Amino acid sequence: MAKRQKDVSVAMLDDLHTSGAGYDILRYISLPGILGTEASTLLYFMGKDLARKLKPESLHDVYYTFEKLGWGRLDYVKEKRKAFVFTLMSDAVVRRLNAPINTEFRLEAGFLAESIQMIKEQPCECKEEINNKIHQVVFTVFVTES
Image (cartoon, rainbow, N blue to C red; front, side, top):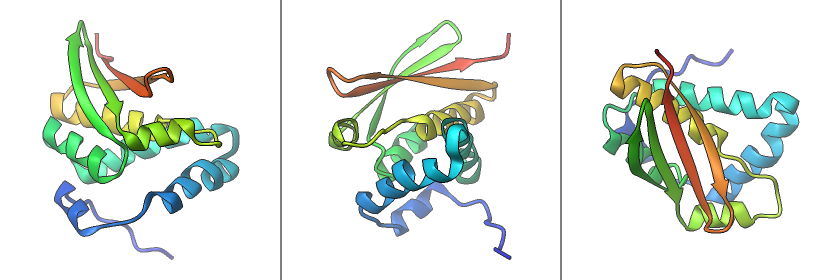
């Protein structure tokens, strides 16, 4: 039986290093095969769970985590009524969008939703939109409490 993983700090990411190809193969080929039609939903909740384990305390921690995990450069764009807008761009995002496999950003969306929820102390959910023309992902984090 596997040992239960303890919560870890964002700073722990400095001690890890990996190349992206193995990660991408697992994420975009193996996991969807195992998770089936629920892959997108489960990846979103995996992202939320990851945020609860890493416990980012600030937007800086969130940006740092995106960079360290190879997800790309996350930038805050603006705050709308009960929503926060972020963009994700990088060479890694361009490569993922141009890859000959189906890629998605649900894991990142879940991580971002839970991170903002923890930082702002308000329930949040996130949706992502891909702009293939400029190789950018736009995340909108909605505060779901009325």
